[in-house]
Length: 143
Image: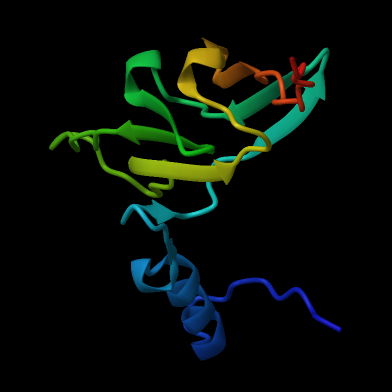
């Protein structure tokens, strides 16, 4: 059984856990070389023969998001430039993150980018993916 412990500055175990959860070395690296820090929540559902993918990307603008489908794998990437600190502004805490977040998911079926409609509203990217018809056996008439 696990216990939840509050982070206590100066406590060696707390400091170690903080290091492990924030250090890039411990993040998962995807096959395309980008990092997946788990910062993008998404839902995948199906309705009327279409896949619906909803990804939370709060704080991103439409032009900061890249969506690609390659060999049945959907990759969503958002990237924000770092805000420069103002000399006359003193920070007590700085938690807002900048940089990139990436998520790659294998999609069911034989999906290509020509079957995708994308919209972005209120920080939620919605992809509607029409699944192509499955190749069915065709009876061949013999003459």
